[in-house]
Length: 252
Image (cartoon, rainbow, N blue to C red; front, side):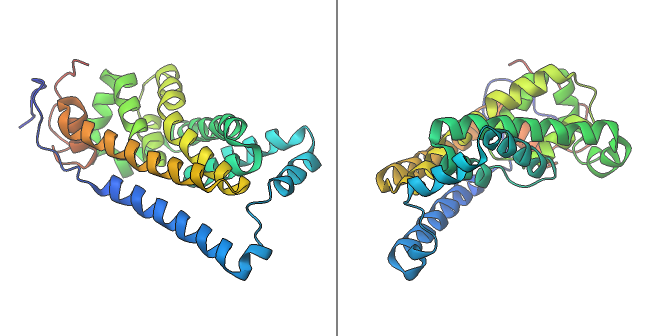
């Protein structure tokens, strides 16, 4: 039976898996960097040579950022995770420019992925995802911006899945693009800072950025577990509420 949105926390299937995944990712990055700096690999992978990265970018001239954006839009559009792309942006351009270029590429890739789902494969996507996520898709139609923003800011759903769910819906493009632009920014900034710290040899910046990445993920998961709206979205995402139940309206 659907749980009404009374403002009280509701039972949800979301656990601490996103935080664990964020911690594993942060640990792998730290282990990789330590391995590079403390072994002969540092002679081949000189991540701490900022001038080397700048030489690569300068060699591309004005086409560098454009090539990076278009390349990112393509790989993210086909389902590649955006966190390594944001990391690379920070390493190549510095954290601020790296975030700008990688963020543009990630948004374009997400929009492109959704366009493919809507205009080229909507019937197949609806058959593959529609029955399991019918309730969530209905919520997206009724409260598009809020639901899409909740799905973007916390990694409880893979980025391609959110794109597919939007693609098979009849929601207009404006809330999708706006929610994607806002919701993907926090993690994008932090991963660009991690990449910048690794490329410049600023280990303190790298560690602080990774710690913030884990803490931000933790904060989002706590919010999902406490908010009735967010917890209900997470339950719908997992198919816990059933695909045939009629979804009650959400009061954001």
